Length: 363
Image (cartoon, rainbow, N blue to C red):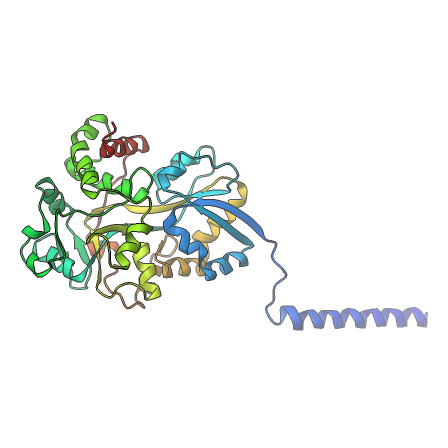
């Protein structure tokens, strides 16, 4: 009996020591048990490549047990290509996301970004002096899309603007550089904005509207010449000091560059007074992608990273303003209402494709 009692006491002591060691080494120091990792494969818009490559984002996702491997494609291309073998698709448009969705769960929009225009300070000043732009008392710039449309219709040149002689580098027709609308969501959405304005402030919804706006859209394409397949190309050209004076990009690209401190100091961000919000929408193609969608939408650490890297988190409307308050570049609108932005509805995907065909002159 004494031996048995001694054995039990010894076992109790060992168990007690084990508990103390665990509390000291693991629980006391905040070390959690190893997380089971899941690798997800997905197709994303190129404007989100830097986000998923960011080391802090990867670390935050790994803490959720997620390793994310991505390939880039234009948003409109995603709805045409085979996505077999992919766990998710992440286009920059909710319209494309719904087109991809099929029988999959309702897409999740973790964050969004308005489409904007970038210019140099001297160019913005010229636009201001000629009623093509305005600047608020808080330093937020607005681009007047109606006035721009009128200049397009009358083939107005930079040289004809009042004060243009002060900037001899500005030559030729005034136009905004965009991406190829056949492959890029941003280029297609630019066509949608211009068609809306040319259609008397109504979303193009039928063949009659397509026919009415087709000459303008074709003109927009012809005056640009060769167009690049994604917004990364024209934006990088702008940052490096080459390319055209007005470039249509995602606000997130400008904000991310500003956060890194690598945006040219004379950059001016102009919010079009008529535009679309680019709803970056994740479509779950397999059940495993649900954890990624929820993490990107709801996790505070990831929300802060989204804002730091230029996006506006859906789950925290104030995060973007807080992040941009710390950068040297000014002019980001914490609230889009400050920029006088009017968001219009996006045409149905079938009509959007007709507008692209009209712009290419192949219809």
